[in-house]
Amino acid sequence: MKPERGPLRVALLGCGVVGSEVVRLLREQADDLAARVGTPLELAGVAVRRPERVRAGVDPALVTTDAQGLVTRDDVDIVVEVIGGIEPARTLMLEAMKTGKSVVTANKALLAEDGATLFAAAREYGADLYYEASVAGAIPLLRPLRESLVGDHVHRVLGIVNGTTNYILDQMDSNGAGFNEALEEAQALGYAEADPTADVEGFDAAAKAAILAQLAFHTPVTAADVHREGITEVSAADVAGAKGMDCVVKLLAICERVPSDGGAQDGRNGRGVSVRVYPAMIPRSHPLASVREAYNAVFVEAESAGSLMFYGAGAGGAPTASAVLGDLVAVARNVVGGTPGPVEVTYAKLPVLPMGETVTRYYIHLDVTDEAGVLAAVAAEFARHEVSIQAVRQVGLGEEAQLVVVTHRAPDAALSAVVEGLRGLDSVREVASVMRVEGEE
Ligand SMILES: NC(=O)c1ccc[n+]([C@@H]2O[C@H](COP(=O)([O-])OP(=O)(O)OC[C@H]3O[C@@H](n4cnc5c(N)ncnc54)[C@H](O)[C@@H]3O)[C@@H](O)[C@H]2O)c1
Ligand SMILES: N[C@@H](CCO)C(=O)O
Ligand code: NA
Image (cartoon, rainbow, N blue to C red; front, side, top):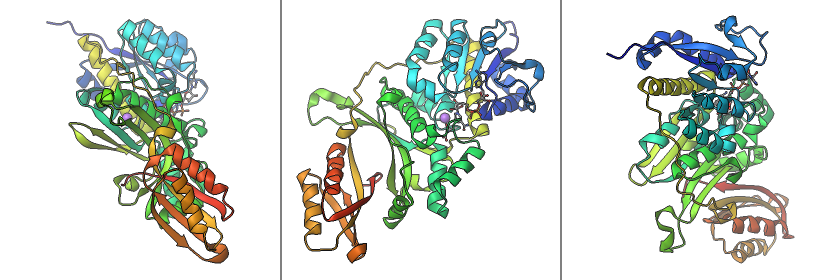
């Protein structure tokens, strides 16, 4: 009979919004977790920056400011990193793996910037590196991509992966809230990053898109490869324009294979992949339009599986801690069983194509002079760049005249050239709103 092993000792790095919930769940669910793992999970230490702070439910004897000392301690088996940011998180995780510990992290910024270094260390030292909490909070999404769908051929991953921006856009759409007011609420609810610029400028969603694309396409993708536009430029006029089209504005992350131009040499992989984050209009009838508050939802389209939808709480302390605990139990089971989990493979090495080559659709709202020939001049600008118009509508008359144009799909470079051209027309007083359109056609 196998000798019974002692408890597995867990070092927690960071005790903020997520870390404090990890401590609570470890304490409240201790017996169940022990039964599920086959041995108890015991907190060995909690590394914090401000030790003087009183933390409910945290034994002060476990608190330390020496994170480096904690991760290299012999009596620690697994390290949970919920500090965030690049350093010291990276050094601490590398130190942990070097000394034979497995790591669970929620740190998408680091994984998207330098995941390769972490994965190489995991491989070299035979450690597990699990990171379900890093994308879409509580929603099981990375494990399905990493394990359940690893036998399939994923074409596209598309969704809402940032809770803070979804919360802001939802408030703007549903009750006309101002941007700053909605952001403050999202911060108070624990959804925002320590520096909310990461959320509103799209860096957080871009990091998540990189992680998703890498897993979906088995190809190296970093945050720097992702085309990124945030929501700071989304105005009340854009939100109103979307309403007028029976659409809603959402910050979308899109990772897709770009089909070949017909040349057979690109095979099933296509010409490469497109990975991008931007605010876009989607029809209110689209399932993503009904994703409210800080919820996230992601569609995965795979060759054999077809279309799958993942939905749930994308941010917040307890939901994120649920994903951390799930990983912790998985890693602990691997330690008990003596078999490490899967390692990342990025064998495909597909090129990430520039945004200009990505095919999209635009909604363009123009303030124009209401006189003969305006429509012809506007239409000529689209024709000059071979962009086909799907619909055009005039609103108002005289000084108030406005044109709303929706295009068919065209290369993004051609669409942005059209917008530049329109800005130069005498009959166009202002390009009031430009937004990509997703989710139909
Ligand atoms: N809050 C969420 O909804 C959410 C969701 C998914 C992922 N995440 C990720 O989880 C991580 C933590 O997020 P959070 O919301 O808990 O942030 P937070 O700012 O509330 O907590 C981070 C904690 O780490 C502490 N810290 C900073 N440097 C430290 C150091 N050197 N040693 C020890 N402690 C240190 C800070 O004092 C803070 O208490 C980040 O990577 C974040 O991106 C957060
Ligand atoms: N700040 C992130 C936390 C979850 O990753 C968000 O708002 O989605
Ligand atoms: Na997740």
